[in-house]
Image (tube, rainbow, N blue to C red; front, side):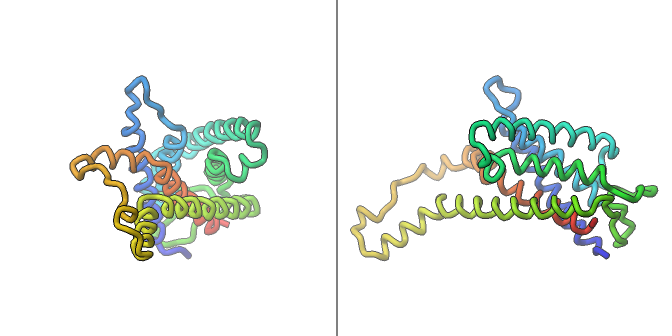
Length: 235
């Protein structure tokens, strides 16, 4: 039996991911001719909304059949992208490619909508929650476990990527500067180059952070962990 508040927390995280994904799409300025709207942000937005509705029935937005069509299209699209990547990078595209995790996420979402064994009752979402009652089970639990393990693996991989970016980002540069200062080097060598004035750090930097690859990875980590959790409690 899963306490309802745990599901509420995961649903809140998914709503946050949906908000960030929507903000990223707006920040990309899709109304401009030179803008690029990424398929990953669209996928993140749809997956987050769908999972929030699966976790908390009051947040459900569309019928299961509509989500099945949406995630079938997303799965086919990312499968096509992975095939293109594999032609360039070979098997590496499956292990460390940009689109492979999104293919697994799309496939896992499609699987969850197709493999639910028990029919939903009145007023129940995909999880069939009534207070803190047990969740509905998957019709093919072995495949669900395989998806959960793959999702966990990609989540760990993304966490390593995110930590690597943090070590080489501005914080990492500050740590290296402190080490140089402690080593007793001359001030002219230890002082880092001056950055932009404080007045210049504002909307532009916030937009850069929002559209950064690290934000994409962070959203993917949150979704991967939530999907794995959902699959495990449905098995």
